[in-house]
Amino acid sequence: MGDKLKLWFYPEVDYLEVTFSEEHGYMRPTNSDAVMKRVDEEGRLIGFSVFGVSRFQKDHPLEVELVPRGDEASRESPPQPASPGEPAIPASRDNTFPPG
Image (cartoon, rainbow, N blue to C red; front, top):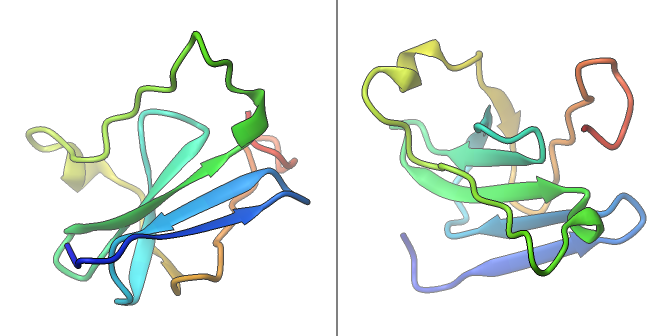
């Protein structure tokens, strides 16, 4: 992880992106429909994104596991290329936005 953390918020789509590195990476799903993680070629975490940020309540924090346990990494979907600062916004299961 680098020394700098970068945050982008896109209010028009209620989307937050956080990056720890300028490396190109791949968006991967997490255990939450609201969060995608960005990993590099070796699978190291280099950022994450959150969809529907404004819908979360202060007294109910969003908890997400960004680092897989055991063989979960082998069950992940194929990578979706993404560059820092250019959000890769996937559709939800029914192809609508925002997901959820």
